[in-house]
Amino acid sequence: MYHGTTRANADSIRSNGFRRSSDGMLGPGVYLSRDLEKARRYPIGHPDEDRVIIKVKVNVGRVIAIRHQNHSLQKTWSSHGYDSAWVPPNCGMVNSGLEENCIWDPNEIRLKAQNIIESRKRGGE
Image (cartoon, rainbow, N blue to C red; front, side, top):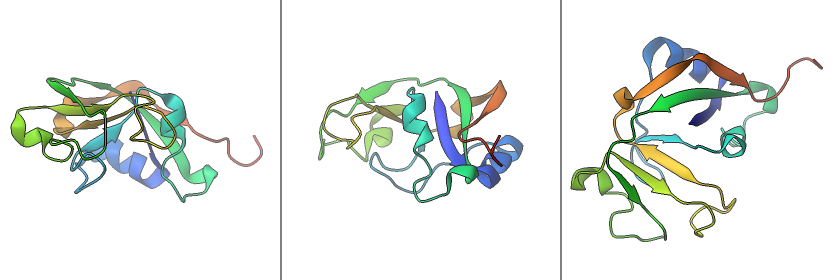
């Protein structure tokens, strides 16, 4: 899977690991995607030269598919025994139509050996 972030955050993740967000479309967790194009879009509002993508391996555990807005477990899945939530592609939840994953426990995410993928080339390279 992939995680789009800033260069500074990528350095912190390499040193300290991932941290769970406090909220989001699927509630608290670490947001990832199997779709590289989805990861390239993040973080929103940052210049291209500050964006990087981290490649990870994840133990997704027990997964719930959230296929529509206002799903009864959309933000509370982790308290119902699920380890991760998945929004399938083209289900209407994400404007881009791309899939998204939310992992509850950051300790289930492992960085790949070559974990940083440059999102955009720097300095006219």
